[in-house]
Amino acid sequence: MATHEISGEPAISLSNLPTTSEQRRAVLVVAVFLVVALAAVAPFADTPLTRLDGFIPSLESVIFINDLITAVLLFAQYSIIPSRALLVLASGYLFTALIVVSHLLTFPGAFAPTGLLGAGGQSTAWLYYIWHAAPPVAVLAYACLKDAGDANRVKRDPRSALRWSIVIVIALVCVLTWIVTAGDRFLPTIIAADKTHALRVPLAIISGSIVLLGAIALLVLWNRRRTVLDYWLMLVVFAVVAELACTSILGSARFTLGFYAGRVYSLITSVAVLILLLQETTRLYARLARSNLLLERERDNKLMNVQAITAAIAHEIRQPLAAIVANGGAALRFLAKVPPDQDEAQSALNRIVRDGHRTSEVFDGLRALFRKVNQEKQPIDVNEIILQVLQSLHSELEDHGVELRSDLSPKLPLVAGHGSQLEEVIFNLVRNAIEAMDTTRERSRVLRVISEPHADDAIAVAVHDSGSGIDPKRIDGIFNSFITTKPQGTGLGLAICRMIIEHHGGQLTASSDGKNGASFQFVLPTGAKSELGTSTSATSQ
Image (cartoon, rainbow, N blue to C red; front, side, top):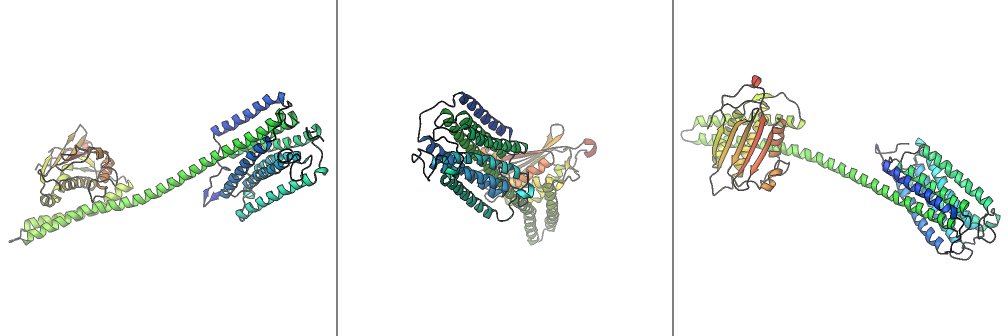
Protein backbone atom coordinates (compact mmCIF):
# COMPACT_ATOMS: atom_id res chain seq x y z
CA MET A 1 0.00 0.00 0.00
CA ALA A 2 1.20 3.48 -0.75
CA THR A 3 2.19 5.42 2.31
CA HIS A 4 0.63 8.86 2.58
CA GLU A 5 2.18 11.44 4.83
CA ILE A 6 1.18 14.71 6.37
CA SER A 7 4.05 16.92 7.50
CA GLY A 8 6.37 13.95 7.39
CA GLU A 9 4.10 11.74 9.54
CA PRO A 10 1.88 8.95 8.13
CA ALA A 11 -1.75 10.05 8.04
CA ILE A 12 -4.19 7.81 9.91
CA SER A 13 -7.19 6.71 7.86
CA LEU A 14 -9.44 3.71 7.32
CA SER A 15 -7.58 3.15 4.07
CA ASN A 16 -4.34 2.35 5.90
CA LEU A 17 -5.61 1.20 9.30
CA PRO A 18 -4.53 -2.44 9.82
CA THR A 19 -7.28 -4.92 10.55
CA THR A 20 -7.47 -6.86 13.78
CA SER A 21 -8.45 -10.48 14.36
CA GLU A 22 -11.64 -9.25 16.06
CA GLN A 23 -12.62 -7.23 12.98
CA ARG A 24 -11.89 -10.16 10.66
CA ARG A 25 -14.07 -12.40 12.80
CA ALA A 26 -16.91 -9.85 12.64
CA VAL A 27 -16.75 -9.82 8.82
CA LEU A 28 -16.73 -13.61 8.76
CA VAL A 29 -19.75 -13.81 11.08
CA VAL A 30 -21.79 -11.46 8.86
CA ALA A 31 -20.76 -13.38 5.71
CA VAL A 32 -21.76 -16.70 7.29
CA PHE A 33 -25.09 -15.20 8.33
CA LEU A 34 -25.77 -14.11 4.74
CA VAL A 35 -24.95 -17.59 3.42
CA VAL A 36 -27.15 -19.31 6.02
CA ALA A 37 -30.01 -16.91 5.28
CA LEU A 38 -29.65 -17.52 1.53
CA ALA A 39 -29.70 -21.29 2.06
CA ALA A 40 -32.79 -20.99 4.27
CA VAL A 41 -34.68 -18.89 1.70
CA ALA A 42 -33.60 -20.80 -1.44
CA PRO A 43 -36.18 -23.64 -1.30
CA PHE A 44 -39.05 -21.18 -0.87
CA ALA A 45 -37.83 -18.31 -3.08
CA ASP A 46 -40.72 -18.54 -5.60
CA THR A 47 -43.39 -18.59 -2.91
CA PRO A 48 -45.76 -15.65 -3.61
CA LEU A 49 -46.42 -13.25 -0.76
CA THR A 50 -48.78 -10.34 -0.21
CA ARG A 51 -48.05 -7.31 -2.34
CA LEU A 52 -46.91 -4.41 -0.15
CA ASP A 53 -46.71 -1.21 -2.20
CA GLY A 54 -45.15 0.70 0.71
CA PHE A 55 -42.34 -1.83 1.16
CA ILE A 56 -40.06 -0.60 -1.64
CA PRO A 57 -40.40 3.16 -0.82
CA SER A 58 -39.65 2.53 2.88
CA LEU A 59 -36.77 0.17 2.25
CA GLU A 60 -35.06 2.15 -0.47
CA SER A 61 -35.42 5.42 1.44
CA VAL A 62 -33.41 3.85 4.24
CA ILE A 63 -30.84 2.49 1.75
CA PHE A 64 -30.53 5.92 0.13
CA ILE A 65 -29.80 7.59 3.48
CA ASN A 66 -27.35 4.86 4.49
CA ASP A 67 -25.41 4.93 1.23
CA LEU A 68 -25.35 8.72 1.22
CA ILE A 69 -23.90 8.82 4.75
CA THR A 70 -21.37 6.15 3.75
CA ALA A 71 -20.35 8.26 0.76
CA VAL A 72 -19.91 11.31 3.01
CA LEU A 73 -17.73 9.29 5.40
CA LEU A 74 -15.57 8.05 2.54
CA PHE A 75 -15.24 11.57 1.12
CA ALA A 76 -14.12 12.62 4.61
CA GLN A 77 -11.48 9.88 4.53
CA TYR A 78 -10.41 11.19 1.12
CA SER A 79 -9.95 14.64 2.66
CA ILE A 80 -7.45 13.04 5.08
CA ILE A 81 -5.64 11.05 2.41
CA PRO A 82 -6.37 12.38 -1.11
CA SER A 83 -6.07 9.09 -2.98
CA ARG A 84 -7.82 8.15 -6.20
CA ALA A 85 -8.87 4.83 -4.69
CA LEU A 86 -10.88 6.51 -1.92
CA LEU A 87 -12.29 9.06 -4.35
CA VAL A 88 -13.54 6.33 -6.69
CA LEU A 89 -15.00 4.35 -3.80
CA ALA A 90 -16.79 7.38 -2.32
CA SER A 91 -18.12 8.27 -5.77
CA GLY A 92 -19.39 4.71 -6.16
CA TYR A 93 -21.40 4.97 -2.95
CA LEU A 94 -22.75 8.34 -3.99
CA PHE A 95 -23.79 6.81 -7.31
CA THR A 96 -25.67 3.94 -5.61
CA ALA A 97 -27.43 6.40 -3.27
CA LEU A 98 -28.64 8.52 -6.19
CA ILE A 99 -29.52 5.65 -8.54
CA VAL A 100 -31.68 4.20 -5.74
CA VAL A 101 -33.77 7.38 -5.94
CA SER A 102 -34.30 6.89 -9.67
CA HIS A 103 -35.22 3.24 -9.12
CA LEU A 104 -37.69 4.18 -6.39
CA LEU A 105 -39.36 6.89 -8.47
CA THR A 106 -39.80 4.54 -11.44
CA PHE A 107 -40.96 1.50 -9.45
CA PRO A 108 -44.57 0.58 -10.42
CA GLY A 109 -46.99 1.16 -7.60
CA ALA A 110 -44.59 3.10 -5.38
CA PHE A 111 -45.86 6.58 -6.31
CA ALA A 112 -47.83 5.87 -9.49
CA PRO A 113 -49.25 2.70 -11.07
CA THR A 114 -46.58 2.70 -13.81
CA GLY A 115 -43.95 4.75 -11.98
CA LEU A 116 -42.81 8.35 -12.38
CA LEU A 117 -40.28 10.05 -14.74
CA GLY A 118 -42.04 8.54 -17.76
CA ALA A 119 -40.82 5.07 -16.89
CA GLY A 120 -41.53 2.19 -19.22
CA GLY A 121 -41.95 -1.49 -18.58
CA GLN A 122 -38.18 -2.17 -18.48
CA SER A 123 -36.98 1.03 -16.72
CA THR A 124 -37.15 -0.19 -13.12
CA ALA A 125 -35.45 -3.51 -13.85
CA TRP A 126 -32.58 -1.87 -15.74
CA LEU A 127 -32.08 0.71 -12.97
CA TYR A 128 -32.00 -2.13 -10.44
CA TYR A 129 -29.16 -3.90 -12.25
CA ILE A 130 -27.28 -0.66 -12.92
CA TRP A 131 -27.57 0.01 -9.20
CA HIS A 132 -26.19 -3.42 -8.30
CA ALA A 133 -23.39 -3.26 -10.85
CA ALA A 134 -22.03 -0.08 -9.26
CA PRO A 135 -20.58 -1.60 -6.01
CA PRO A 136 -18.48 -4.29 -7.77
CA VAL A 137 -17.21 -1.71 -10.30
CA ALA A 138 -16.29 0.78 -7.55
CA VAL A 139 -14.64 -1.88 -5.38
CA LEU A 140 -12.69 -3.28 -8.35
CA ALA A 141 -11.43 0.22 -9.22
CA TYR A 142 -10.53 0.80 -5.57
CA ALA A 143 -8.64 -2.51 -5.38
CA CYS A 144 -6.67 -1.73 -8.56
CA LEU A 145 -5.77 1.81 -7.46
CA LYS A 146 -5.00 1.30 -3.76
CA ASP A 147 -1.53 -0.15 -4.38
CA ALA A 148 -0.69 2.02 -7.38
CA GLY A 149 1.85 4.16 -5.51
CA ASP A 150 2.17 7.71 -6.86
CA ALA A 151 -0.53 6.99 -9.43
CA ASN A 152 -2.98 6.72 -6.54
CA ARG A 153 -2.21 10.21 -5.22
CA VAL A 154 -4.35 13.19 -6.18
CA LYS A 155 -1.52 15.69 -6.42
CA ARG A 156 -3.25 18.76 -7.83
CA ASP A 157 -6.08 20.43 -5.94
CA PRO A 158 -7.80 17.45 -4.20
CA ARG A 159 -10.84 19.60 -3.39
CA SER A 160 -11.38 20.36 -7.06
CA ALA A 161 -11.14 16.64 -7.85
CA LEU A 162 -13.76 15.94 -5.19
CA ARG A 163 -16.14 18.56 -6.57
CA TRP A 164 -15.74 17.29 -10.12
CA SER A 165 -16.35 13.71 -8.98
CA ILE A 166 -19.64 14.71 -7.38
CA VAL A 167 -20.69 16.61 -10.49
CA ILE A 168 -19.78 13.69 -12.76
CA VAL A 169 -21.68 11.19 -10.59
CA ILE A 170 -24.81 13.34 -10.54
CA ALA A 171 -24.59 13.84 -14.30
CA LEU A 172 -24.05 10.11 -14.90
CA VAL A 173 -27.07 9.19 -12.79
CA CYS A 174 -29.21 11.72 -14.67
CA VAL A 175 -28.04 10.45 -18.08
CA LEU A 176 -28.57 6.78 -17.21
CA THR A 177 -32.00 7.55 -15.75
CA TRP A 178 -32.95 9.40 -18.93
CA ILE A 179 -31.70 6.54 -21.12
CA VAL A 180 -33.69 3.83 -19.29
CA THR A 181 -36.86 5.93 -19.17
CA ALA A 182 -36.95 7.84 -22.44
CA GLY A 183 -35.27 4.98 -24.33
CA ASP A 184 -37.17 2.17 -22.60
CA ARG A 185 -38.49 0.76 -25.89
CA PHE A 186 -34.96 0.37 -27.24
CA LEU A 187 -33.68 -1.66 -24.23
CA PRO A 188 -33.56 -5.48 -24.23
CA THR A 189 -36.63 -6.93 -22.58
CA ILE A 190 -36.05 -8.48 -19.19
CA ILE A 191 -39.54 -8.04 -17.68
CA ALA A 192 -42.61 -9.83 -19.06
CA ALA A 193 -45.34 -7.80 -20.70
CA ASP A 194 -47.63 -8.21 -17.70
CA LYS A 195 -44.81 -6.86 -15.44
CA THR A 196 -45.26 -9.70 -12.98
CA HIS A 197 -42.04 -11.66 -13.51
CA ALA A 198 -38.64 -11.49 -15.16
CA LEU A 199 -37.57 -13.42 -18.24
CA ARG A 200 -35.03 -15.97 -17.08
CA VAL A 201 -32.66 -16.07 -20.08
CA PRO A 202 -31.82 -12.33 -20.39
CA LEU A 203 -32.02 -11.99 -16.61
CA ALA A 204 -29.51 -14.80 -16.12
CA ILE A 205 -27.13 -13.15 -18.58
CA ILE A 206 -27.30 -9.75 -16.86
CA SER A 207 -27.18 -11.16 -13.34
CA GLY A 208 -24.42 -13.57 -14.29
CA SER A 209 -22.36 -10.72 -15.71
CA ILE A 210 -22.68 -8.73 -12.48
CA VAL A 211 -21.92 -11.82 -10.38
CA LEU A 212 -18.81 -12.45 -12.51
CA LEU A 213 -17.78 -8.83 -12.07
CA GLY A 214 -18.29 -9.17 -8.32
CA ALA A 215 -16.22 -12.36 -8.23
CA ILE A 216 -13.36 -10.58 -10.02
CA ALA A 217 -13.57 -7.66 -7.59
CA LEU A 218 -13.52 -10.10 -4.65
CA LEU A 219 -10.51 -11.96 -6.04
CA VAL A 220 -8.49 -8.78 -6.70
CA LEU A 221 -9.34 -7.27 -3.32
CA TRP A 222 -8.63 -10.56 -1.52
CA ASN A 223 -5.12 -10.64 -2.99
CA ARG A 224 -4.53 -7.04 -1.90
CA ARG A 225 -6.36 -7.03 1.41
CA ARG A 226 -4.52 -5.26 4.23
CA THR A 227 -6.86 -2.85 5.98
CA VAL A 228 -10.14 -2.94 7.85
CA LEU A 229 -11.80 -1.13 4.93
CA ASP A 230 -10.70 -3.88 2.52
CA TYR A 231 -12.46 -6.56 4.55
CA TRP A 232 -15.75 -4.69 4.80
CA LEU A 233 -15.72 -3.94 1.09
CA MET A 234 -15.31 -7.66 0.37
CA LEU A 235 -18.38 -8.21 2.50
CA VAL A 236 -20.32 -5.62 0.48
CA VAL A 237 -19.48 -7.31 -2.83
CA PHE A 238 -20.31 -10.72 -1.37
CA ALA A 239 -23.70 -9.39 -0.22
CA VAL A 240 -24.43 -7.98 -3.69
CA VAL A 241 -23.66 -11.37 -5.24
CA ALA A 242 -25.85 -13.11 -2.67
CA GLU A 243 -28.71 -10.67 -3.28
CA LEU A 244 -28.60 -11.18 -7.05
CA ALA A 245 -28.62 -14.93 -6.53
CA CYS A 246 -31.64 -14.57 -4.26
CA THR A 247 -33.69 -12.21 -6.45
CA SER A 248 -32.66 -13.13 -10.00
CA ILE A 249 -31.82 -16.82 -9.90
CA LEU A 250 -33.92 -18.21 -7.05
CA GLY A 251 -36.88 -15.86 -7.13
CA SER A 252 -37.57 -14.11 -10.42
CA ALA A 253 -41.11 -12.85 -9.78
CA ARG A 254 -41.94 -9.68 -7.88
CA PHE A 255 -43.46 -9.88 -4.40
CA THR A 256 -42.26 -13.44 -3.81
CA LEU A 257 -40.22 -14.57 -0.82
CA GLY A 258 -37.05 -14.28 -2.92
CA PHE A 259 -38.01 -10.75 -3.99
CA TYR A 260 -38.55 -9.57 -0.41
CA ALA A 261 -35.53 -11.46 0.93
CA GLY A 262 -33.26 -9.89 -1.71
CA ARG A 263 -34.32 -6.36 -0.73
CA VAL A 264 -33.80 -7.19 2.94
CA TYR A 265 -30.31 -8.33 1.95
CA SER A 266 -29.67 -4.85 0.56
CA LEU A 267 -30.91 -3.24 3.75
CA ILE A 268 -28.93 -5.50 6.10
CA THR A 269 -25.74 -5.00 4.13
CA SER A 270 -26.20 -1.25 3.86
CA VAL A 271 -26.98 -0.81 7.56
CA ALA A 272 -24.27 -3.22 8.75
CA VAL A 273 -21.51 -1.62 6.69
CA LEU A 274 -22.61 1.88 7.69
CA ILE A 275 -22.64 0.98 11.38
CA LEU A 276 -19.23 -0.63 11.13
CA LEU A 277 -17.82 2.31 9.19
CA LEU A 278 -19.18 4.67 11.84
CA GLN A 279 -17.69 2.48 14.56
CA GLU A 280 -14.25 2.37 12.91
CA THR A 281 -14.36 6.08 12.14
CA THR A 282 -15.27 6.86 15.74
CA ARG A 283 -12.47 4.60 16.96
CA LEU A 284 -10.08 6.23 14.50
CA TYR A 285 -10.85 9.75 15.64
CA ALA A 286 -10.75 8.66 19.28
CA ARG A 287 -7.25 7.39 18.57
CA LEU A 288 -6.36 10.69 16.96
CA ALA A 289 -7.80 12.58 19.93
CA ARG A 290 -5.77 10.46 22.35
CA SER A 291 -2.64 11.00 20.26
CA ASN A 292 -3.25 14.73 20.26
CA LEU A 293 -3.81 14.67 24.02
CA LEU A 294 -0.57 12.76 24.51
CA LEU A 295 1.29 15.28 22.37
CA GLU A 296 -0.15 18.12 24.42
CA ARG A 297 0.81 16.35 27.63
CA GLU A 298 4.31 15.74 26.30
CA ARG A 299 4.63 19.41 25.42
CA ASP A 300 3.30 20.43 28.84
CA ASN A 301 5.68 17.96 30.50
CA LYS A 302 8.63 19.43 28.62
CA LEU A 303 7.59 22.92 29.65
CA MET A 304 7.08 21.71 33.22
CA ASN A 305 10.50 20.08 33.19
CA VAL A 306 12.05 23.36 32.10
CA GLN A 307 10.10 25.19 34.79
CA ALA A 308 11.02 22.52 37.35
CA ILE A 309 14.73 22.75 36.57
CA THR A 310 14.60 26.54 36.63
CA ALA A 311 12.65 26.54 39.89
CA ALA A 312 14.94 23.89 41.35
CA ILE A 313 18.01 25.98 40.56
CA ALA A 314 16.36 29.07 42.06
CA HIS A 315 15.27 27.08 45.10
CA GLU A 316 18.66 25.52 45.73
CA ILE A 317 20.64 28.71 45.09
CA ARG A 318 18.37 30.59 47.46
CA GLN A 319 19.58 28.41 50.34
CA PRO A 320 23.32 29.29 50.23
CA LEU A 321 22.48 32.88 49.29
CA ALA A 322 20.27 33.14 52.36
CA ALA A 323 23.11 31.75 54.46
CA ILE A 324 25.53 34.25 52.90
CA VAL A 325 23.17 37.11 53.73
CA ALA A 326 22.66 35.84 57.28
CA ASN A 327 26.40 35.40 57.88
CA GLY A 328 27.13 38.76 56.29
CA GLY A 329 24.67 40.41 58.65
CA ALA A 330 26.25 38.59 61.58
CA ALA A 331 29.74 39.70 60.51
CA LEU A 332 28.54 43.31 60.35
CA ARG A 333 27.06 43.05 63.83
CA PHE A 334 30.27 41.58 65.24
CA LEU A 335 32.35 44.32 63.62
CA ALA A 336 29.97 47.02 64.90
CA LYS A 337 30.58 46.02 68.50
CA VAL A 338 32.89 48.09 70.66
CA PRO A 339 35.45 46.68 70.64
CA PRO A 340 34.81 44.64 67.40
CA ASP A 341 34.53 40.90 67.89
CA GLN A 342 37.01 39.99 65.21
CA ASP A 343 37.05 36.25 65.91
CA GLU A 344 33.29 35.90 65.44
CA ALA A 345 33.41 38.20 62.42
CA GLN A 346 36.20 36.07 60.98
CA SER A 347 34.11 32.91 61.50
CA ALA A 348 31.11 34.54 59.81
CA LEU A 349 33.24 35.63 56.85
CA ASN A 350 34.69 32.13 56.57
CA ARG A 351 31.16 30.76 56.44
CA ILE A 352 30.35 33.27 53.68
CA VAL A 353 33.30 31.99 51.63
CA ARG A 354 32.24 28.40 52.22
CA ASP A 355 28.66 29.16 51.21
CA GLY A 356 29.95 30.83 48.07
CA HIS A 357 31.76 27.62 47.15
CA ARG A 358 28.64 25.66 48.01
CA THR A 359 26.68 27.73 45.50
CA SER A 360 28.95 26.46 42.75
CA GLU A 361 28.60 22.92 44.07
CA VAL A 362 24.81 23.27 43.93
CA PHE A 363 24.99 23.86 40.17
CA ASP A 364 27.24 20.84 39.72
CA GLY A 365 25.02 18.65 41.89
CA LEU A 366 21.79 19.64 40.12
CA ARG A 367 23.33 19.17 36.70
CA ALA A 368 24.52 15.69 37.64
CA LEU A 369 21.14 14.89 39.21
CA PHE A 370 18.94 15.92 36.28
CA ARG A 371 21.30 14.46 33.69
CA LYS A 372 21.55 11.25 35.72
CA VAL A 373 25.30 11.18 35.20
CA ASN A 374 27.08 8.34 36.98
CA GLN A 375 29.74 10.37 38.70
CA GLU A 376 32.34 8.63 40.80
CA LYS A 377 31.13 8.41 44.39
CA GLN A 378 33.34 9.30 47.32
CA PRO A 379 33.34 8.08 50.93
CA ILE A 380 31.20 10.57 52.84
CA ASP A 381 31.12 11.29 56.56
CA VAL A 382 27.47 12.22 57.03
CA ASN A 383 28.11 13.50 60.55
CA GLU A 384 30.64 15.96 59.21
CA ILE A 385 28.13 17.23 56.66
CA ILE A 386 25.48 17.60 59.39
CA LEU A 387 27.85 19.65 61.52
CA GLN A 388 28.75 21.90 58.58
CA VAL A 389 25.07 22.54 57.82
CA LEU A 390 24.23 23.27 61.45
CA GLN A 391 27.18 25.64 61.72
CA SER A 392 26.14 27.40 58.51
CA LEU A 393 22.61 27.86 59.87
CA HIS A 394 23.73 28.81 63.38
CA SER A 395 22.76 32.47 62.99
CA GLU A 396 19.40 31.58 61.48
CA LEU A 397 18.65 29.19 64.33
CA GLU A 398 19.35 31.97 66.82
CA ASP A 399 17.29 34.52 64.89
CA HIS A 400 14.28 32.19 64.93
CA GLY A 401 14.70 31.24 68.57
CA VAL A 402 15.23 27.55 67.82
CA GLU A 403 16.92 25.30 70.36
CA LEU A 404 19.20 22.75 68.67
CA ARG A 405 19.57 19.26 70.07
CA SER A 406 21.82 17.00 68.04
CA ASP A 407 22.51 13.37 68.76
CA LEU A 408 25.09 12.10 66.30
CA SER A 409 26.44 8.56 66.59
CA PRO A 410 30.22 8.81 67.19
CA LYS A 411 31.08 5.75 65.07
CA LEU A 412 28.87 6.17 62.08
CA PRO A 413 29.92 4.18 59.00
CA LEU A 414 30.81 6.15 55.89
CA VAL A 415 28.55 6.14 52.85
CA ALA A 416 29.46 6.29 49.18
CA GLY A 417 27.95 9.36 47.52
CA HIS A 418 28.19 12.99 46.51
CA GLY A 419 28.86 15.30 49.42
CA SER A 420 27.33 18.44 47.89
CA GLN A 421 24.06 16.65 47.10
CA LEU A 422 23.72 15.12 50.56
CA GLU A 423 24.53 18.52 52.07
CA GLU A 424 21.61 19.98 50.10
CA VAL A 425 19.29 17.32 51.51
CA ILE A 426 20.27 18.02 55.13
CA PHE A 427 20.24 21.78 54.53
CA ASN A 428 16.70 21.59 53.06
CA LEU A 429 15.37 19.40 55.87
CA VAL A 430 16.85 21.60 58.61
CA ARG A 431 15.72 24.84 57.01
CA ASN A 432 12.21 23.43 56.41
CA ALA A 433 12.08 22.51 60.10
CA ILE A 434 13.08 26.06 61.09
CA GLU A 435 10.36 27.54 58.87
CA ALA A 436 7.79 25.02 60.16
CA MET A 437 8.35 26.29 63.72
CA ASP A 438 7.89 29.97 62.83
CA THR A 439 4.20 29.79 63.77
CA THR A 440 4.87 28.01 67.06
CA ARG A 441 3.87 30.27 69.94
CA GLU A 442 2.57 28.09 72.76
CA ARG A 443 5.56 25.75 73.09
CA SER A 444 9.30 25.98 72.72
CA ARG A 445 10.92 25.60 69.34
CA VAL A 446 13.16 22.54 69.41
CA LEU A 447 15.09 21.07 66.50
CA ARG A 448 16.47 17.57 66.93
CA VAL A 449 18.97 16.07 64.47
CA ILE A 450 19.84 12.41 64.95
CA SER A 451 22.23 10.10 63.10
CA GLU A 452 22.65 6.43 63.89
CA PRO A 453 23.46 3.07 62.31
CA HIS A 454 20.47 1.39 60.68
CA ALA A 455 20.44 -2.39 60.47
CA ASP A 456 23.82 -3.86 59.50
CA ASP A 457 24.58 -2.04 56.26
CA ALA A 458 22.91 1.38 56.42
CA ILE A 459 22.73 4.61 58.39
CA ALA A 460 19.72 6.75 59.28
CA VAL A 461 19.51 10.52 59.70
CA ALA A 462 16.39 12.07 61.21
CA VAL A 463 15.29 15.70 61.57
CA HIS A 464 12.49 16.41 64.08
CA ASP A 465 10.78 19.76 64.67
CA SER A 466 8.24 20.95 67.24
CA GLY A 467 6.08 22.84 64.78
CA SER A 468 2.38 22.44 64.03
CA GLY A 469 2.98 19.25 62.04
CA ILE A 470 1.60 18.04 58.70
CA ASP A 471 -1.89 16.77 58.02
CA PRO A 472 -1.56 12.93 57.91
CA LYS A 473 -3.84 12.90 54.86
CA ARG A 474 -1.29 15.00 52.94
CA ILE A 475 1.84 13.28 54.18
CA ASP A 476 2.03 10.88 51.20
CA GLY A 477 2.01 13.70 48.65
CA ILE A 478 4.53 16.14 50.12
CA PHE A 479 7.40 14.61 48.13
CA ASN A 480 5.65 15.22 44.80
CA SER A 481 6.84 18.09 42.65
CA PHE A 482 5.03 21.42 43.16
CA ILE A 483 3.25 20.14 46.28
CA THR A 484 3.99 22.35 49.30
CA THR A 485 2.59 23.06 52.75
CA LYS A 486 4.22 26.52 52.89
CA PRO A 487 2.40 29.62 51.59
CA GLN A 488 5.43 30.82 49.65
CA GLY A 489 6.92 27.40 48.87
CA THR A 490 7.71 26.10 45.39
CA GLY A 491 7.06 22.45 46.19
CA LEU A 492 10.44 21.39 44.84
CA GLY A 493 12.70 21.14 47.89
CA LEU A 494 11.42 17.81 49.21
CA ALA A 495 11.02 16.43 45.67
CA ILE A 496 14.68 17.15 44.99
CA CYS A 497 15.67 15.70 48.37
CA ARG A 498 13.86 12.47 47.59
CA MET A 499 15.46 12.35 44.14
CA ILE A 500 18.93 12.78 45.63
CA ILE A 501 18.40 10.13 48.32
CA GLU A 502 16.97 7.64 45.81
CA HIS A 503 19.90 8.44 43.50
CA HIS A 504 22.13 7.28 46.38
CA GLY A 505 20.14 4.06 46.77
CA GLY A 506 18.33 5.22 49.90
CA GLN A 507 14.83 6.18 51.00
CA LEU A 508 13.35 9.39 52.42
CA THR A 509 10.20 9.24 54.53
CA ALA A 510 8.11 11.59 56.63
CA SER A 511 5.77 11.15 59.58
CA SER A 512 3.50 13.45 61.58
CA ASP A 513 0.35 13.30 63.68
CA GLY A 514 -0.68 16.75 62.47
CA LYS A 515 -0.22 18.34 65.89
CA ASN A 516 3.17 17.73 67.47
CA GLY A 517 5.65 18.55 64.75
CA ALA A 518 7.00 16.45 61.90
CA SER A 519 9.85 14.00 61.43
CA PHE A 520 11.86 13.41 58.27
CA GLN A 521 14.23 10.50 58.03
CA PHE A 522 16.45 9.20 55.26
CA VAL A 523 18.26 5.88 55.21
CA LEU A 524 21.41 5.37 53.14
CA PRO A 525 23.32 2.18 52.43
CA THR A 526 26.94 2.17 53.62
CA GLY A 527 29.99 1.33 51.50
CA ALA A 528 32.26 -1.68 52.06
CA LYS A 529 34.09 -1.34 55.37
CA SER A 530 37.39 -2.28 53.78
CA GLU A 531 37.10 0.72 51.44
CA LEU A 532 35.41 3.31 53.60
CA GLY A 533 36.30 2.49 57.17
CA THR A 534 34.43 4.22 59.98
CA SER A 535 34.03 7.75 61.12
CA THR A 536 35.64 8.88 64.35
CA SER A 537 35.40 12.58 63.91
CA ALA A 538 31.82 13.12 64.98
CA THR A 539 31.10 14.98 68.13
CA SER A 540 27.94 15.64 70.03
CA GLN A 541 26.55 18.99 70.89
